Length: 452
Image 1 (spheres, rainbow, N blue to C red):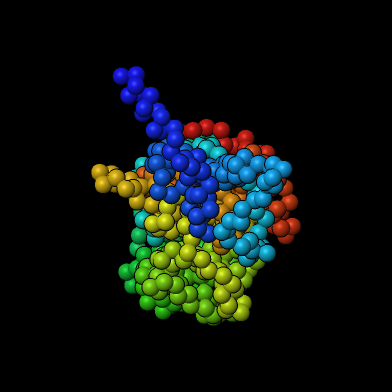
Image 2 (image 1 turned 135 degrees about the vertical axis):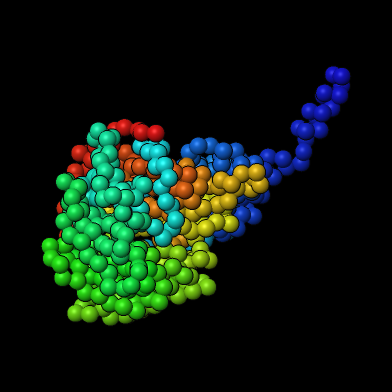
């Protein structure tokens, strides 16, 4: 028995180039794409974790391999140290868009987790929005619920169950607009929870499906017949434009200075309009299979528009001259087979946040994995985390741009400190022309409870 044991260890101990095979050869043969975490037993173990910052793990693996190389190629009189040449992608000399990226991964575990029962996470329903006043507004059982995090006691409207699947705060966080039955758009006073205005779409038998506010209190609304209405909060005047799209409008987004408006349709169409005396069509986005999944305007560079299509390709366009700045097939650190659910620019740093969904390899489960990946340009990941076990179609920013709310199909709403504990690092990142934000430190004291 003793001899057999010794023989076993002997065979194991003297595998040729055992240590180098595990690290050095793998490192030299690694392709330019960053497959640090894919197709390994470690991957399956990490995916079982409730929360993990995969960007931190990837950095740890990279640093470990560098240290291992240095230990293998130690300097000696007859063999001077020389770092081997590795196949790595060339660094971009400058950022693709104006951005102030983080130098290391910052996002930690979620600060607050809320249970959102029966929330409609259909990707074309805008059932949740985060106002500048710090209130989360969500639609539940055909009523609006406002969540003030100071006491965690929500308030609700009393509309008789007539509110549908669309809600949007105004820029100052004092009023919100909702879609209602009978082709109505209603504006509520957030403090009194009373209706201040009602507007009717002029289409026959339609539903308001998308809403956007301007800083001057005009409200753009898109309907299921492809028409757009423009109304003013303090009057009953409205403008009606038919035939904007030939399908249901599911998303409206204004550029930072409100010169351009993106209109996205149910079947993946996307049109950009220039807002002047009339709506002038200036750009038609066409991605893979002509299906656009998500769009995002840069927070202070008005001409920059990011577009994600059904093939997971992200395009960066300059709308002023209609030129393509860059494009990339985006993917998280972990998996190559994934789906982009949404993307958005951070209002403070202009880093691009992309929500990826990866299906589980376990055939006995319907759950998968979501990765929230932060890009500093089209090819560089600076932060990434895994927490939700389902698709995340909504990513919302608070009034300061420092907190992120993610809503998943598994009925969880998580609130994150997007810059971690690096409060001093975010000072001055927002352009000077946009100073109407809350104090970062006052905002930290506002979120101090977890409700499940």
